[in-house]
Image (cartoon, rainbow, N blue to C red; front, side):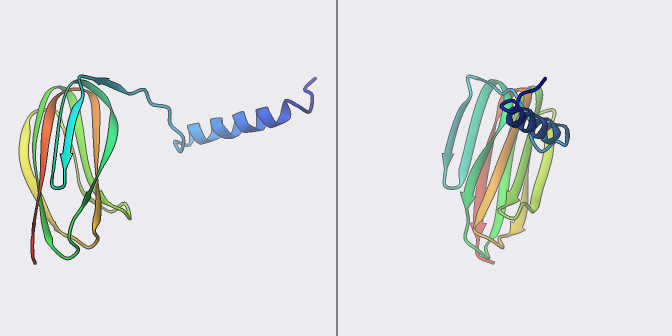
Length: 136
């Protein structure tokens, strides 16, 4: 027989289980081996021997300027996902890298605040991200 003192625990565990099954709550193990990053105002650099997880890095740009984001990704194992979005979660760039690549993309800055989501899936390598702003 369940006593009244266990009912709140059962309710909380049930809510957590439902949130987990719907994908709202996730449990993720993250691994960082020799993970080194350096971020300045317009540049982000990372290198790692093993990286499984994600981080967010924020950048401020001048509203109304044309922003060009250049990337140089090195992947020796696994994969790396780069996502660039604004505070309203509008995606400007989303790509998964399985091998080393370089490239760039441009957009008109409608806001001042942008986020780089840096996700590794058991990856080894590094990357450099550079922002260049110009008046539009």
